[in-house]
Amino acid sequence: MATVRIEHVAVWTDDIDRCLQFYVRWFGATFGARYRNEAKGFESCFLGFASGARIEVMRSTTLAPLRSEPGAQRMGLTHLALEVGGEADVDGLAARMLAAGVPLLDGPRRTGDGYYECVVLDPDGNRLELAASR
Image 1 (spheres, helix red, strand yellow):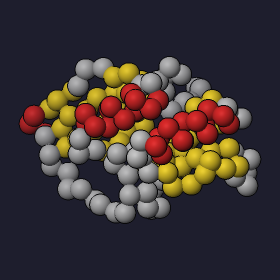
Image 2 (image 1 turned 90 degrees about the vertical axis):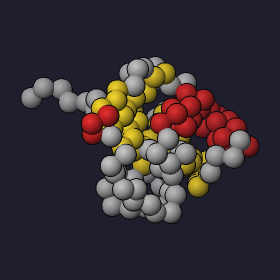
Image 3 (image 1 turned 60 degrees about the vertical axis):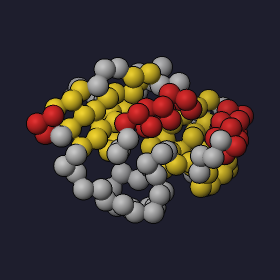
Image 4 (image 1 turned 135 degrees about the vertical axis):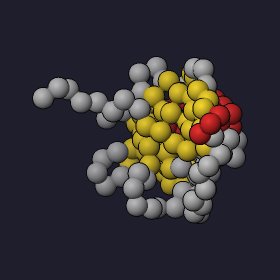
């Protein structure tokens, strides 16, 4: 069997610029050119990280928003974990994000399964785990 790795994760947003700037500001992401398909009411842009990981940020004019409480637990993809360095890096980033008004849901703390993490929300209410290197 060939080696399998996750190529990218995609998230829907109603404001691509807001979403891009969040990941650029807090995680040093870069982004490329936007793709637009006017006939389908679709546009997207890829965020890239130094590790090679990528997130596709997508917007659609034909997709009805499914709104739930920001950060609510739900079936399906529930969070994205981003390794941000050591425990001190998690603590520092969490403190800076909290001071800037980014919602912090939990932590920083050590979990029962040994992770050191903090849970914040991106601008669209998606849960992000800020994880320390293991």
